Length: 363
Image (cartoon, rainbow, N blue to C red):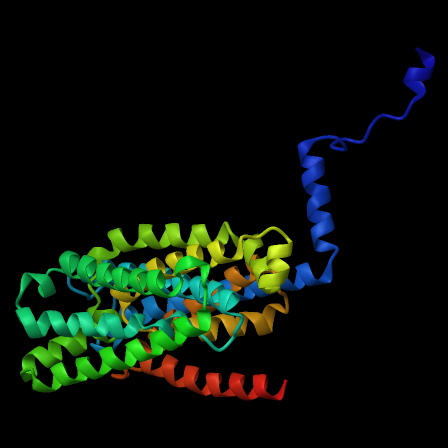
């Protein structure tokens, strides 16, 4: 009994869940790479918060100031009405940016290239072509085009069907020829783009303006009624991709190494292309064509994070895409620019693609 009492008491928490958690946190932060990753995430989160504040401020207080009013002098319900349009727009921008970034990273992993995006398969062309065909055949006043829910389901459905048909022909019998898929997508984009431009030339002016408004990324004119349908689908796509992050780590090593480590490479490519098709279709149908947003976000995340692990890359890419889209729209509203945010993103994206091509060529 005396010997037992003389033994040192166990330290509190050594064998408890809290103790294991504290040890895990200490081990995590003992690595400089993890500390750097957390700092980057915190800085991106602060930047996103600042962009959100600037966007809300530009649409509320700054707009009232330009009208010579304050919040107290604003008409009853004015601020609530503005916020009723501002918050759904923020949700749509954030969700679309996250989806585009996540599927762009997964697409670059399976095609083993940093200069390609899912848009090269032809999603953007199918989106614009579908809107143009609906207006040309049925008219801008048709329920198929004017009703936001019917238009959304038709557009997203056609993009998914086209991509599935394309995948079934090109990726059948276990022949996952990604290069041929990209070439087919480029040809398909050219054909649909030529037909779309022809229809837009021969349609009347008012219908043309309706098509332009529907296919350009203009957050102010975006129909926020379909957010309740689109965002749940986007959440499922994002979580399905994040859940597979370890498989992307292995697939990034190449087909031979992935197969040797037990990854069914062909089946994984097909599954990922289906997820990418659904995510790209839903996001494009909601917010419009953003060809280079995912490319910019993913490659910026690669440069900042300095890692090959996909989970931190997914998170950083999503945060970079949300920051770029929200901040770009906030700056546009702040300075009252008429130019859409997509023009700025695509311009920067084109320059960055040239830089990546030259960089890859040197290596």
